Structures are given as structure tokens and as C-alpha cells.
Amino acid sequence: MIANNFTYFIKETFTIYKTNKLSTILSLISLSMIFFISILIISGWGISREFVNLLKNEAAISVYYEPNLNSYSLEALSSTILSIDGVTHIIDVSADESYTQMEAILGSEAKILKQFDENPFVPYLEVSVQLEDAKMIGEAIREIEHVDYVRDNQTVLDKISQISIIIGSIGLLMTVAVVVATVLITSHIIREGVHSNEAQINTLQLLGAPDLFIHLPFWISGVLISFIAGVFALAMTFVVQFNLSSGGDRILPFLPDFTELFSFDKVIISVILCSILIGATSSWFGLRMVKRK
Amino acid sequence: MINSQDCSLTYKDGTDALKPFCLKIDKGEVVVILGASGSGKTSFLKLLLGIEKPTTGSLEVLGNQMSSMSTTQIRKLRMHIGPIFQDFRLIEGRTVLDNVLLGIRFLEIPKRERTELTLTSVERVGIQHKLNQVVDYLSWGERQRVAIARALARKPNLIIADEPTGNLDHDNAINVLNLLSNLAGPETTVIITTHAAHLIDEIPFTQIITIKEGLMEVKKSDRK
Ligand SMILES: Nc1ncnc2c1ncn2[C@@H]1O[C@H](COP(=O)(O)OP(=O)(O)O)[C@@H](O)[C@H]1O
Ligand SMILES: [Mg+2]
Figure 1 (spheres, each protein chain N blue to C red):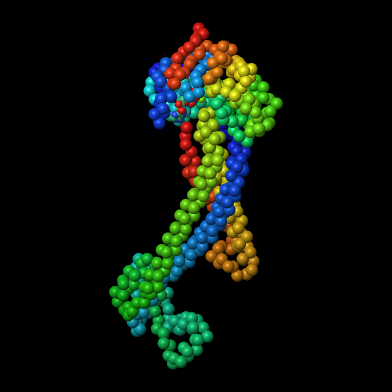
Figure 2: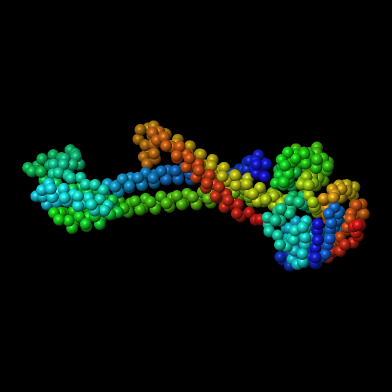
């Protein structure tokens, strides 16, 4: 029955658009905007997550040991620390290296270091750890012999933890908001279409047409409008991204640079799939209000 | 074909539209339902189409018990019925051709037979010269012919026509009644409602059923 009436269904779909011209155009515009904004939000979210992950992996604890420790004991200390769960690796930072690091940090102000006759820095171990285990590992290291002092930047680590949770929740919230808005708009267009075609639907029911036959054009109209909105949103994203990146500094730095990044077929495919999927679900949702007679 | 035992219809608001009636209509009959306006003619046709369900008693249409049918089953039954509604229920904004086609698209009729079937039925009712005209601008009589063509193209086992003589003068009314009763055949039963008592002698009917305030009565029967 579907294959037999393929052209009919397509024609009906466009008749539905024609009879609801204004609402079709308005829905198309709002859906395109929603998709466009969600592309921005989701790519921004992805980039921030990557950033937080980077920070997470960089979480480090500085371990200061007894100054007169011989190299044999130092090695033993290192391997004890390395055996703690959650420790990824250890760098042995000598006093000279500490000095150089501080010089780099201070930049042009580094000349104040020249005030010291002797190197004021002491050697330490830089222990890289998994963020979640930082607190526990810090405590464990404090208990080890020859350890003088442990600096674990707990407040900074806690902040990073909080930020990652906040970014995660915001992203989730935004995604939910986008999906809900899209479903509401699309199912509303379907409803509107159904409403203005009530007489025809009623007649077809009286003639014995199955629901699939009656509903399909409306369903197609919902899927198609969502799909076209997805394509428009992609076009807008590319226009914005190309215009901004050609000027040197990108105004939306969190967006992947499409000019370099050729994995944008991934972006295209996911946006198109999502728009079709959302359109299909919401159309189905909107059609559930048709009274069966 | 159609069989009822003490079937009655009371609407939700309490209106007693049809008092308990017993009927038997066979394949190929031409049945005229005669009654004044408001007597319950349309209500009876609504029962046949499954738009309303019997309040009491039983009603069998084309082998289906109407009181115990799901919506999907009712739709399937309707595929075998060719209804000509009092207000025709054409699809506005579409051509004559589209209207007739739309009545058969979802039936089990091969695609290549559709066009032929449409053209034959349009010719049979004499509206072929308006084939590509939008139905909105047709006269009442022309719209009626489109409705008949749509019903006919469906190759139905049961044709029901609600007050087809409504707006017509005497001669045209007789023409339409003859057209409809001629649609009856070995596989097709025709049921026509009317309030015009003076016209019925002109129709080759098999049964005349009168309705008075919901009370049905078989008046004349030529059934063999
Ligand atoms: N949906 C309905 N709800 C309540 N009463 C109705 C409904 N449809 C028809 N009626 C009433 O049922 C009676 C029979 O109506 P109907 O079958 O339309 O008569 P006819 O077709 O013979 O003119 C009338 O009194 C009418 O007002
Ligand atoms: Mg009536």
C-alpha cells in the first residue's frame, strides 16, 4: 500500500505545508535556530569537557623529602609512591630544575631570583595522580618514611572536580531543553496540520482507510521539516565558522575549526540523524492526538 | 448480508433514535428506507458503517457482529462499503479524479487497475467531462455524481445512499434513484434512504422499510 501510493504521500505532504504556510515557515525558522544553537552548545560542551579531562590528568602532588636523603633511598621512596593505586607517574625535580621552572614562570621578573646567593629551592618529587584519588594518595604519602612535607593543592583539585560536574550538568540540561523544545514545536505543527485537515481525515476514516495511510503524509511532513531545519542549522554553523576563522582570531574558539578539521562529515551525519530522529518521534507524538473512529 | 435481532440505538444524550428492530437483507437487494426528517434514517446507516454501535440487541453486517468490533476491524469492514453521504463528504480543493482515486488508493486494488476503475465509474455516472475540475465549484447534482462514482469505484458489497433525492426536482430524482438501484448486482446490495414517499413506486426495490420516530417496519417486500 505504501509503495503503491508513494507519489501520493509526497504530494499530500506538500499540500499539508501549503495549507499551513505560515506555521510551516515559522516552525522551520524556529527549528533551524534551535538546532543551530544546540550545535554551538554541544560543541562548546565537548570542548570544555576535554579541557577538564586534561586538567584532571594533570593533577599533581608535590612531595618534599628529607634534604640529606641518598639517591638509593630516594629511588626506594619513588617506587613506594609509584606502587600506590591511582599514581600515574613520578618526575624527580632537582633544585636546579625548580629554579629554572620558577625563572620561566616569573619571566622578566626572574631577576629577583638573582638576589639569592644560594639556590632557595629544594628538590622534590612531582607525583601525577588521578584527580578522584588525589586526597587519598596525599594522605598515604604523608605516612611514608623520609617524607617531610606534601603539597597536594587540594582546594584547586576540588575546584576542578566541581567545574567538571557543573559543565556536565549544564550540557545535559541544555541537551534536554533542546530535545523538549524540538519535540514540542514539531508535534505542534503536526497537530495544526491534523486540525486543519480534520474533515478529510474524518472522511478517509469513514471510507475505511487504515491509520497508516491517513497518518503517513503528516508524519513525513514532520520528519522532512525537522530534516530541512537540520540542514539549515549546519549551513549556518559553517557560514559562521568560516567567516570567523578566516579573520585570524576565531570569535567562537570552542568550536572545532572546520577548515582544518575534516572530521566534519561526523558533525553532518550526527546532526542529520538527530534531526530526522527527533522529527520522527515528535511527529508520532503529535499524531497520537488524532481521534480514531 | 445484514441481519439484526432487537437492535436499538440510544445516543449518549438519551435520544432514542431507533427502537428495537429485526431485519434481514440479502445479497443483491435494493432496499428503500422511507421516513420523515428526524425519524432515524441516518442513524440506521451509522449503525451499518460502525459509526455508532447498537445499544441493545445484535446487528450483523457482511458477516461481522457490529457490537464487538475493534476500530481496526471496523475500518476493514468499511473497505467493502460504498457510502454516499447526505453532504457527500468530498475532499475540497481536489479534482473529481483525485476524489474518486482517494476512495480506492488504500483498497486491495492493483495500481494499474485504479485508473481504469476510476474512469469507468466516472463515465457511468456521467461526470467524465469534469474529470480535472476542482469539486468546490461543481453544482449540487454534479457533486452528488462524484460521490456516487467514488462509492462505485470501490467495487463495494454494500452501497448506502443517504437521501440522494434531497435537492433534486422530480425527473432528476428519478434518474438518480434509477442509477443507484442499477448498481445492485449479484455481489452488491443497495440501501437508499429518502423522505419522498411519492418517488418510491418508480424504483425497482426488493424491500421498503418505513421509519416513524425510530420505529422500523417492513412495508412492502418483493423478496423471493
Ligand atoms: N449524535 C447524535 N446525538 C444525539 N442525538 C442525535 C444524534 N444524531 C441524531 N440524533 C437524533 O436522532 C434522531 C434521528 O436522527 P437522524 O437519524 O439523523 O434522522 P433522519 O436521518 O431520518 O433525518 C433525531 O431526533 C436526531 O436529533
Ligand atoms: Mg438524515
